[in-house]
Image 1 (cartoon, rainbow, N blue to C red):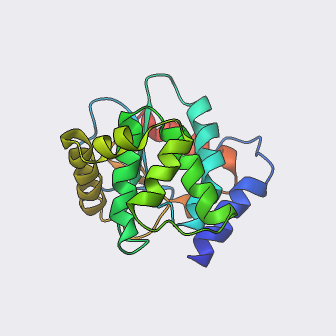
Image 2: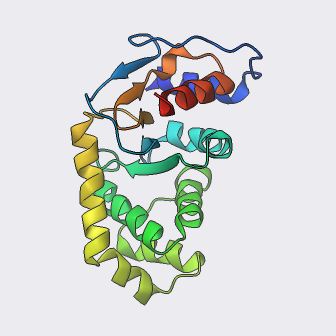
Length: 200
């Protein structure tokens, strides 16, 4: 985990490279599935409890601004960090997406855990975060218990299992390619690699 942290910290701090790079399978990315998604997409596997994922958030925002408009970015929370709170925060993300407050809620959760260093202990604390984002307790609780949200949270868990994700952050492009983040030296190079894979 320390190696991953050092990498992503380096991606944030290193100056952008002016040189484009050739990307190759087995070095810069791995093929993890035979068939790609019908439309280009980037799926970020992360956990609110992961400090490296917190540091990676600005890179995802830069990536979003640089990708073609037809490329979607999907966030997939994993359950295996945070003990019993992992699955609850997966459902919180799903509810936030359904209520169109994902950016606000995610920022608040990351801030509380990593900047304020305050624990999130159960549904009461989650509902308080939604309330700060402008969603009433009743509406937030209803969303988290709804069939679509339960289904989306289950899908996130299946995605984690399907792609055998064991560490985060991890990036899957077009449902077929897993990015080897250790093969790039800058934020710009990472964005170039992801962009290249979205077009394969």
